[in-house]
Length: 374
Ligand SMILES: [Zn+2]
View 1 (cartoon, rainbow, N blue to C red):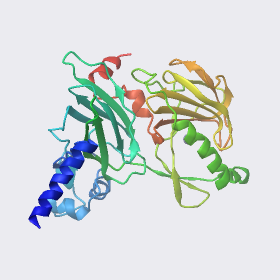
View 2 (tube, rainbow, N blue to C red):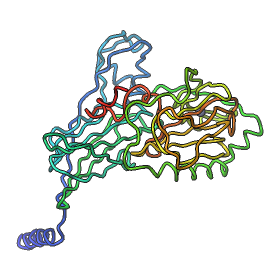
View 3 (cartoon, rainbow, N blue to C red):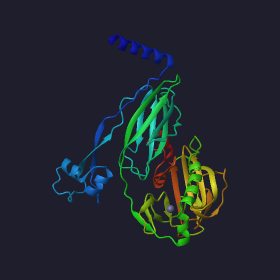
View 4 (cartoon, rainbow, N blue to C red):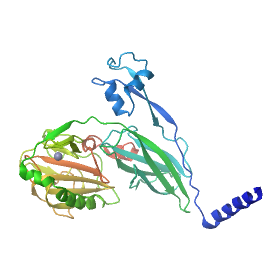
């Protein structure tokens, strides 16, 4: 029996050599607890939801006798473990960073990988493929790459898988599996009453057709980023935000069936809509639900969309720079008054566009910080 086992092992080794089976090393990271500093308005119930744990567990971990009494500035140990990134990485991989470390639902995550030699990368966040962009090798001959990932607005608070796979010039592969802790966001629920004519636009066939058309657009993107630095708001000088990203929505007394996939600016009919960053026009046409619509491809899997326009100034294929006019604010499609709906997608995931107007993306790497000053 032992002899057969020995033969079996030898045969497997031989097969491995003959088939050139790649050495696939998976690296797992240790768990670390979350420390939360209590902010005004925090309650244990809200913290339990955000960190995917229970009021009782937080109370027990911090010796809290009365769960209704927590103080602003108090340090709470949240008994949910988040996974720390691994300190040792396999093969030529030398660094793996994720920024922000504890993203909130609807946020954009930058994944940064460094290697000691040129590698080609694949990988995924939450099962969705990552598009890698190579930075110029620095003086130490390191190779640095980044990819953006959108955290879905309805992603369950808790751990979500991030997979990075590297292949070197000889075809040898290494894999790193880590988990990113997603925090619950703070979203309100809106009830929207639509007139009967507009209600007909909610019919599934109409929604599906347009959805498929857009999915094809989100799926195509220039490999290299066409933008640099921080985005600007698409309407200026200042128009109030009338509906925030991520707001849960209930139509005509039904349950909350969807969420707001962009930001609404309460701009007047005819106000100019400007490109928030450089890109290429990949859609400029009338849609049933979204009305007169423009979509820009900014490269690296990033798109922005502008719905309900009155006029469109651009055509498919046009290259635009930051600040170029795209059209005018209107009230076309499924809309109850003149406003601009502005949407930003990373891959096919709608994320909150406002952080893109506050800091340069990708974030957390030196070259992008240099670009941030615009
Ligand atoms: Zn909207």
